[in-house]
Length: 105
Image (tube, rainbow, N blue to C red):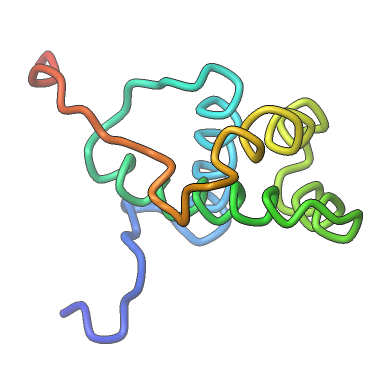
């Protein structure tokens, strides 16, 4: 039963899920497009949209907050310098999920 379950578990313990989402978020911000499963993409959307919203506020505390969540300086710099100004007028919905073909196997 999924009573009270807010996120998908992906058959991983909490720390591995956190690392998975962190690495996927870094890849998405760096490349601006990644290929992953639909479930992971839906979960990743929550993480990345919160990061872009924090980047739109733009204070030093927000930069440090993102560095604590994603210890990758290039990613945080790109969120603040490229993504936040790009989505400054949009009130949310920064990511889009495209369904590709079925996975091989």
